[in-house]
Amino acid sequence: MLNVGRSAVLFVIVAFGLAGCGSGSDPAVPPPSSPTTSAAIGMMAACPSQDAKAFTAPVAGGTAVSGVQLGDATRAVVLSYEWGGSPCDWSGVATELVARGYRVALWEYGTLTGLDRVKELQAVVDQVRAAGATEVVLAGGSIGGCVSMIGGSMITPAVSGVAVLSCASWYDVEHRMPTTPLAAKLQVPSLYMASDGDSLPVAEVRKDFAAVPAKDKKLVVVTGSTAHGVELLDETGTAAKPALFAFLDRITR
Image 1 (tube, rainbow, N blue to C red):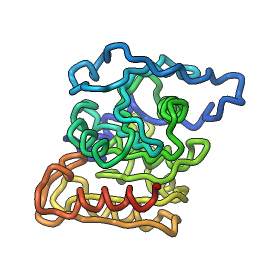
Image 2 (cartoon, rainbow, N blue to C red):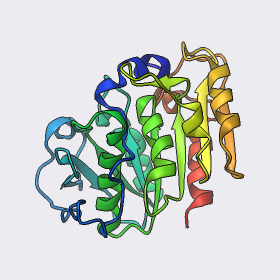
Image 3 (cartoon, rainbow, N blue to C red):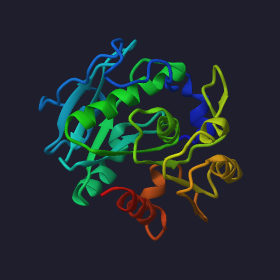
């Protein structure tokens, strides 16, 4: 997978959005669609789909995004994937999370660019809440980690926390927006993860993590590894996956 430095270089297509972020009270923002049980479409069609509920969420100013929800718990995790990857890369983690008592949403990035990308994540969170989730955590790797980090300070109502895997430095090859000033806006509980052998310098991750003002925050560095993004959770014998699960269990009920 690409690191955030690398994924950031390719982020022009999937950068994120502040403009138009809002609740259903904004007449410019369409209400979330109702969850359906139709077959998954796009990238999700290739993911394991047992008991998955497909949805399509309208996005103000953009094209509707598609996704699936697994589980029916009131605490939920929205998983965002690496650029060049697929939502299916998170299927194994999603299955484990459902078994641990979570609702999980996987989704496919749409067409909005620049900071407008947050509108898509907002639409997915709205969808999950409309389906019954009362607590939502954002998690992702590489660009998906940046999605989660940025959304953690912009999604309304506020999410319960964010888990940021392999995100630092900057994103968006066109605008080269640095991530550190955005991390400095993150007030919700935050878990950062990285490996010390990734081409994304761990020093950059430490810099972003230090900028996070949230009182509840933790950094996990996997030593002796080159893993990036969701790959951090695939490595056995490391603290990454237990740390993620412990974080989720602690900040949700």
